[in-house]
Image (cartoon, rainbow, N blue to C red; front, side):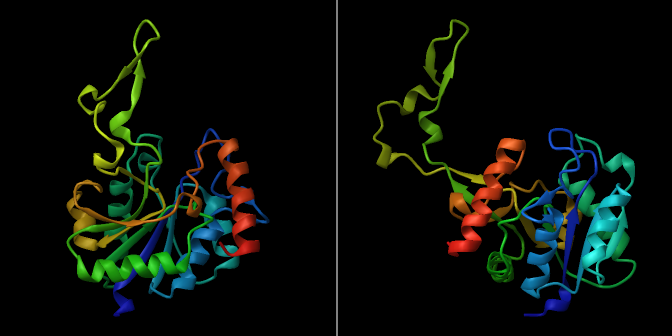
Length: 234
């Protein structure tokens, strides 16, 4: 593995509303973003780990423990609620490629306390064999989305896909969703701005290997799960 070709970018904006200061809020004893940085560092995959943020406090806290980080001050126009991931990563790529050469980029989200070095290594090995795709962790829906229901205007239940209601569960294709931890891909693929899910391969992870942290209920559950995993090594 030519590890000198890889960089990690952790995009961590400062404007979270549902959980204020989410990216640096203390999670089981450490600022949340430290778990993402530590996983990237432990993997030994990256020549450089870059934290990109519009918030000086996030940059300062990130570099307090991890002295070798590269810090990128993100423009405020790329730090609002509506800015998607790809333009943010592309902006950092174009800034950093003026400093050194690299080929592969892993975008690691800042709120991933369950992320492990082993999963990052597994993703990189898959990328080596599928270098025209993004690699990302996915998880299986526990119930088939093809049997999903909706409430109509009269609060009555209706099947979203009526054609599937008579099908046996074992005859319906499994469905998966993005675990929201990271995306690993070629620098040129990121720069092409091809949508993340239109050219990607997934690594299946268990539902207890991640938590999508959107509110304090998610946060509290993630802290409990994180403690259990660390104590029992599940």
